[in-house]
Amino acid sequence: MNRLVDELASLPGIGEKSAGRLADHLIRLPRERVQRLTDAITDARENVHFCSKCYTLTDTEICPVCSNDTRDHGTIMIVEDTRDMQAYEKTGKYSGVYHVLQGAISPMLGIGPNDIRLKELMTRLQNEEVSEVIIATNSSLEGETTAMYISKLIKPTGIKVTRIASGVPVGGDLENIDEITLLRALDGRVEL
Ligand code: ZN
Image 1 (cartoon, protein in one colour):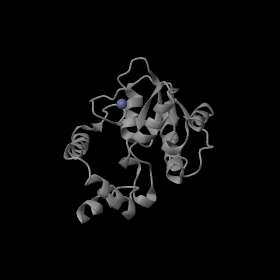
Image 2: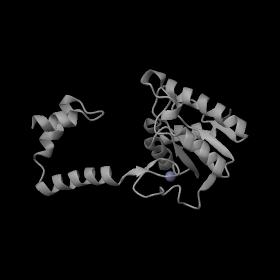
Image 3: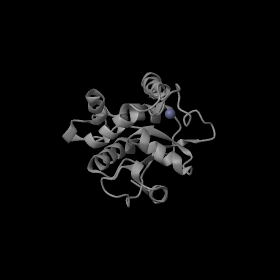
């Protein structure tokens, strides 16, 4: 039981108390429910990988968004992680595609430009017909630093670069912001 509580408490967003409650709940579940849960975790860990185009997490070689021909493949929205992409997907109003950095530049955490998917982004911009890149990194210090870096990187290519409007609370994770604010930020994007 202590082992289970320790494991659960080591997960993000779960404190000692919640871990205790979860553990208490789990040990009371029927065996097959527990099996389903452990299977789901194992399957996800084994089958989920990065989309070979946009680097979101997916269980197919190319994710459903990238493989959808009705999407506008000439507009690429850059987000920090898969959850941010899902937040925009939930609005159902964005018809372009994405590029998922899987992080943001953070000198404090020792994350540099080479540690996020920027090289892959530049390769995409070289090989694909892209008319606009929308930078939708978070409005945190790391997100802004990353946005500045990317805009400088892309500028010489002549491709239009825009940044979603702020109004998104500083330090706020995109995934925690409601849909209306997300869409307002997208509509109000400015050219860099
Ligand atoms: Zn993809």
